[in-house]
Length: 218
Image (cartoon, rainbow, N blue to C red; front, side, top):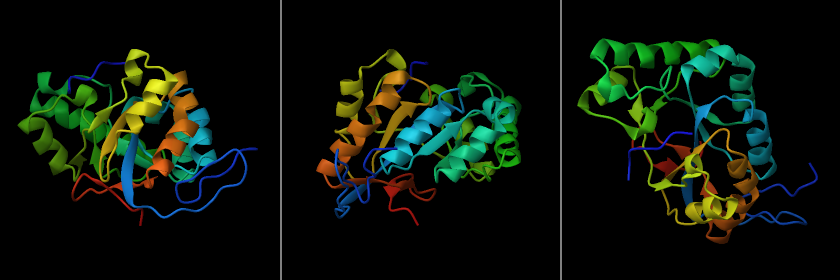
């Protein structure tokens, strides 16, 4: 896990509520963007299972090299109704690269994800959250909206299940949370995340390429 530079037998979540018994629908008073970086990985299918079993959708910021190596997992993300974003090809600090190198990292990832069946991403997250005007300009040239985050769960730093759930509990309408595809505690936290969001009337939404904020899925 990397350190960011920036400060069946279970109930199915219908509109934001999950319980050990039957699911109950509840109105969404707001939407938040759940995001998972660095996939697809060997844990992707387990993550997708946890998300779908708890009625959650998320944006998966994939590395191009992983998408190229595991296209079936990219298709699994799409089949699970997740959104797929660009997280560079090889996860470098883009601010330390030339414009041509940044373009290669972003464009190769666009092609790799599309070739894997993930569509053409509209959202981009720079590795480590490291960005500058050149990175943003190159991303925009590829039709990508840069997405950072409002809340960092610190799952990359071995945060506990409870800590990850509590971090998600700090989200407010429109905000985006940083998580990763891989940590066991992140996967284990998914049911708790579903419960804490539902308790606050929040539902997992899409991230708008226009505003960069979480909105109701279309």
